Length: 625
Image (cartoon, rainbow, N blue to C red; front, top):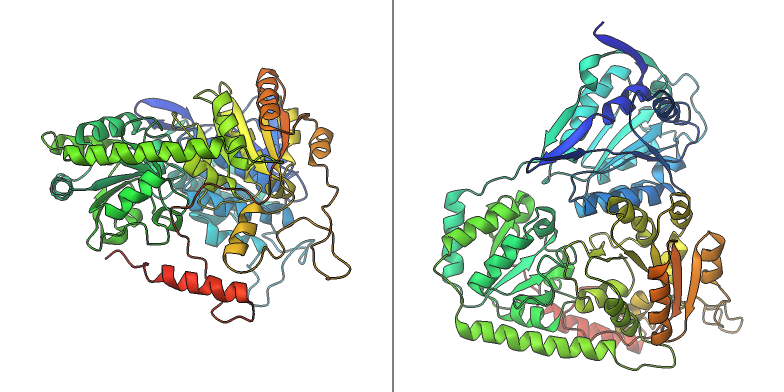
């Protein structure tokens, strides 16, 4: 018999269990498991199929229980990021709000170019019981459901409204998940009746499939054009992005920088591709970038972007590259990014592209005076960093002091996770990463609530590493539920919970824009003013973390924090280290600008002054043509 009778959900589970990815001769499970929360719509479909697989052994696809649907997508993305996008999880959710809770996670995955497979349950394909619980009734069309909202944030979307449609849909999903240039969230909407419907499936659908992730080779003529531009450069600069890490190009990049003398700045996703103490490493670039990186960017005549998408934070909103004749060479697997800023494009794998450029520039390097200029700027940057780490602020410590202490107690392989608030800016300028996986800051979508859930995914991806979640009170209150998942799965994660009773990042931004930190503090409503500017709220986040099952340590000073971190490292359980910092900073000195529009007219003097400053910065902004 060449067919087997299974439900659509059972067929999908069996199919996913037999998918593998391969790169450089190394194979691994493409989808090693399924995250889920069951409700009506998937409990009798995907839920039954996963139970049957686990009970009978017909498919090896473990199930993991999350506490929040958005959180399980974040955990999957973090896992995929750690695995260089060669493996990810599937996520199943119930019909209606359970599924739409995953949309923010889908947006994060696609913005970051990270693969994740989403399986939102959908309404009845037969429409026999319409309108059912949680169904959107759209007067424009009967086939519209809430899951259509996934279309805008998915790299591939399909609705499997008949069992046999699963075959082309599932194969297309694997194609996109393993495409480094087109990957992101992949959504297969599964009507709840179709999940449970039986069909005769060809056995060949369930054969072992290996999806080969290739390394596109650079075109020789493109290498020649790029090498010509670099040879003529006097002050070239490399910008290393996430693509340099995902392709495993770290060794090639370091060798290239050493041979040519071109300094290497990095983005959030690229930090660690060149160790912080490498002679060519000049730190983070852009709006919250380091002194050395931004100074060299101002002077750069040729910029070699490697695996970067040039977000506004990287370019300081198109102001950081100040040479009016600056030229770009972009090495990227995605043509979308390769041609940005009217660049000379090198559409290729980052590692192979760097190696080809190195071969074309074997007899060339920058002038010795430029190497000396780089060394001097790095030395000045180190002074700035050390001052931030040892500022001696009080009575509450500054956040930068906590980061300095944390940097000193962790080893090179420890992974630090963050996504939102004031910490990404501090980390980009101050964190000293020597390992390309040690710095895990999600700053393409900068999603509050990512951090704790990401800790689950990172630890699952590499249990041998210490995983440290850095989270402010704002992000913690958004989504801390996956602490329970850490406990249930026996995962040891350290969570550094920084409490400052408000939104430090947006508060400082609000103040700089003339909005006086309005609505950015956690306070009682003041009966006299009618505003949220009363006393500090008696919120005990440490007690909350303890109630979720974590061990909790308190730190009042920087030395207390060091001691607590040593205890947390020695523990085998998830531990929260609670430390209170000053809401008002001080933060590291700024070396870049970020374009956030200010009200052009205002009755407030603070806003009027901020607009004058904003208008001045706008004069330096331009398209790179």
